[in-house]
Image 1: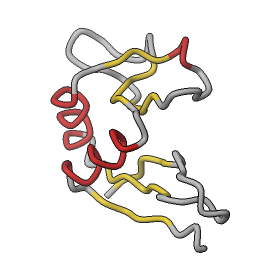
Image 2: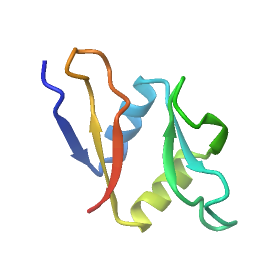
Image 3: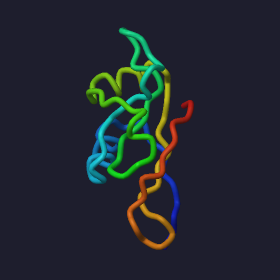
Image 4: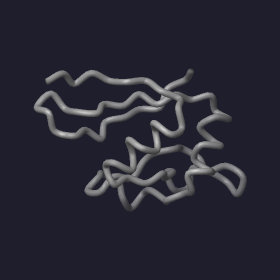
Length: 92
């Protein structure tokens, strides 16, 4: 099976991918301000750095995503066929 990645800016596609893996929108603690959530991430069960992430609303996550002109690169499956939580945020 291929471990190809997909690039998207579609909010519904992003939310579906994250929620299908039981993930939540998040930001890195202490990187933002009252008006800015800071560095965006997703918090997946068992992921590294759980103690460094703060959950935020999808609305706040997508507001920052769009304002920063970002796109999501994600991998649906690893090469062995298992679901993948690999992602990175890139400039559009």
